[in-house]
Image (cartoon, rainbow, N blue to C red; front, side):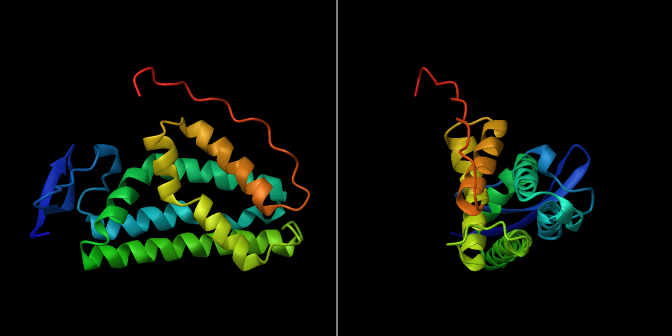
Length: 193
């Protein structure tokens, strides 16, 4: 794939540096643009880091409440940044700098998962048969932006349905004495698949 080089594009008084390639020029949705004068390379890690921080104040919240907050935060982050994360993920194999950025994002996702699992483990809330490292891997995987893309973008789930599924799945996979989850509402079927 041939790199044409970075160019500046402007949308609604915002400027963003976008990598244009012969086969797949990327033009982000205006909601995904960083503030004026901030490049994608600087904005993406800031967006992700700000979005992925897990509030240390929630140490006094029940384990179920922590997973509820995590699912709500996941929905909020991915509603706002999901498309940007998907662009970065897809471009990572074609561009070394974007690949490095994606690795940093992945590391941050795993770091946040480990921090939350440590909170659950320290309160004796994890399933007894689940090692903390395995639990962090499960949380990392279920909360991964690719899962959001598959369920919300590809399968056309509503963001609220994703949030409910994620919370219920995290509870059943991670927590000791997890109660059975209520059924997830059906999504409306597309009459023209």
